[in-house]
Length: 100
Image 1: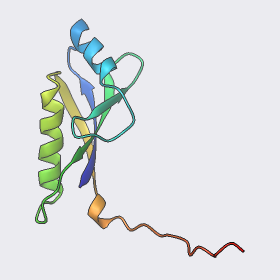
Image 2 (image 1 turned 90 degrees about the vertical axis):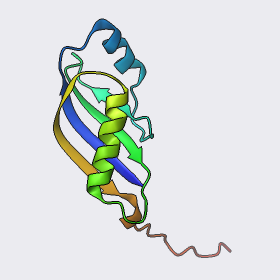
Image 3 (image 1 turned 90 degrees about the horizontal axis):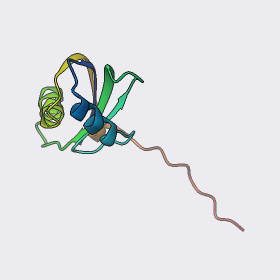
Image 4 (image 1 turned 180 degrees about the vertical axis):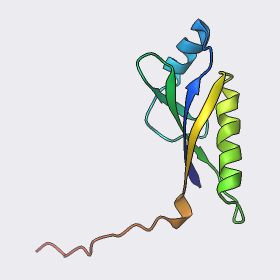
């Protein structure tokens, strides 16, 4: 699983597009993606989750994220893409002492 954040700007967002971006807002990572944005709705961060096959890398994750962004149908320009491969994340758990 990859988590991808795309920072960009909207190019000529219509009133209908503005309403759709506001409705698709959120902080979580989902396969459909969610937007956070500035107050004027000109700049945005798009967060999405992209499934990973064993051989997939950042290029495949970026293509999947851009496809999810394209599915929203808004005109945009990409400024920066950040990809995190969740398969590389290690969770450190504390040793739990029995209460007693």
